[in-house]
Structures are given as C-alpha cells and as structure tokens.
Amino acid sequence: MSELGVEYEGRINVTILDVNTEEGKAAVAKYGWEEARHGLVTLKPDGTMVGTLPSHRYGMPEIRAKVEELLAAE
Image (cartoon, rainbow, N blue to C red; front, side):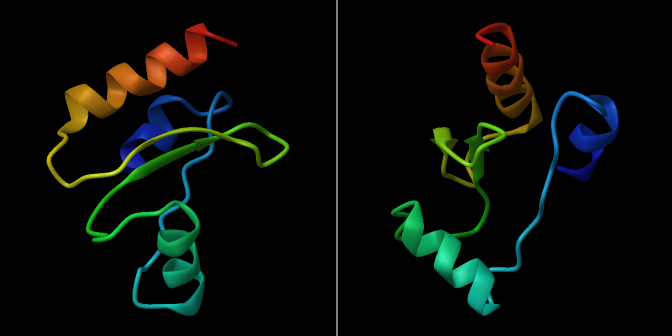
C-alpha cells in the first residue's frame, strides 16, 4: 500500500494501521469489518467515508482500479 502513496503523491494520502492497536481496532469496528487483514477505506479530505474495499482477497490491480475510479469521480 505504501507504494500507492508514492505513485499517487499529492493526490492521495495512504495511512497504514496496525489492527492490533487501539486505533486499528477502532477503525475495524467503525467500518464494520468482521475480520481485518487488509482493507482500503477511502475518505474525503473532511473525513467523510467514500467507500471501502474490505478484504485481503484484492490485489494491487483491483486496489489501483478503485483509486483511479475515485479520483476520476472528483
């Protein structure tokens, strides 16, 4: 995921949370994930959630496509 932050620098911010911390556990609960291995939450600059891609089943092509879709919708 950190490579997306570099690739889209200036267009998106990437934050990686450890689900074993209180902050990570709170995020898992907030976005309704039953099992948190990997997931993508997209937020507007004001913190409003735009969408999620909650699963470890998605690879970088699917994640990149979702980022592109959201950036195009701006």
